[in-house]
Length: 409
Image (cartoon, rainbow, N blue to C red; front, side, top):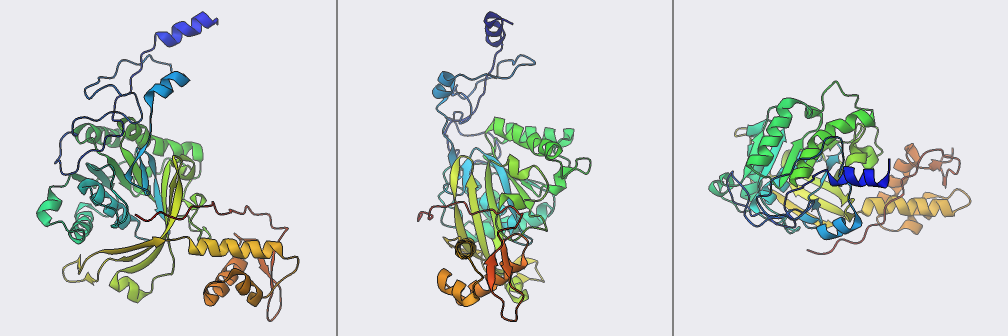
């Protein structure tokens, strides 16, 4: 084929991507269309009522550097420093780390244009569509309403928010799910789409451990939300064999860690006691990041209020305390660095003196690392064991990604 043939093929194909560039939609609209004046952040800026031109079958769009430069695409945020927009990703974590509560809180704050956890500025607000395949619409509504009341909204104000909840389940590749998602993107033009949790929409016909098969489950959603410039948050779980570190490799099933463009990873800083659960108190560690930006680590203390077993409501209000995090991750790294630098086994006392910080926390962490197959830390077989770096360890050591200290909001 000659160069002229190639030129003819590409010139006869028509392509158009319509959408919104850096246009923050305004919260408070109920149900219908978006505000005027938006342009595309992923595609070409071409006005509000652009109709997509026909796309030639069999060809993919070929971009030149000039065309890409003219687009001047720059992502923005739903909440600055928390989630880039538009993007697609997962919020994943260990068991009972309030994954749905966090996703619901984010949904209310996007819909109302409120700061997330009182700390992260809302940059892009607007309608939110939630597929809840685990809780049911009524339970999800009670949680959202509790968050809204705790954020200073009256019930009447909450009920005017552009929040849309779907509690029926269908696999993401099914005609029913695809038509429902397509309808919401057209009718509500949601800023944020939430699918909670993934397993309810995955389908048993797809091999969960096969990255090539599992990616179709995720792409079936993100292809549509990306085209509509709706940020997608899929709530997922960590695999049971995870070593407790907040890492994309701990996301359960195949495909998720490769597919994500943004992520929120959640774990317990300390395991909650039964008394903590009854009082709704949790100490979380959170790692956020994305392919379009760097990332941060946060410590978040949560109080949901005490659960009333007569009314099935939470008493009091939801309270969040957010601080710069990564303490546990930094401690692990410091222990590894110290042991790797030593040429012989050392005592716990030596490790504590080198690492610093809380003595009991360091002692506990050394034991955890020595007992885990996920770290090259081994103990000698003695009554008072010493510890060393196993240089013959065959595992893959996931070094921490350096993170800047979070900026004060």
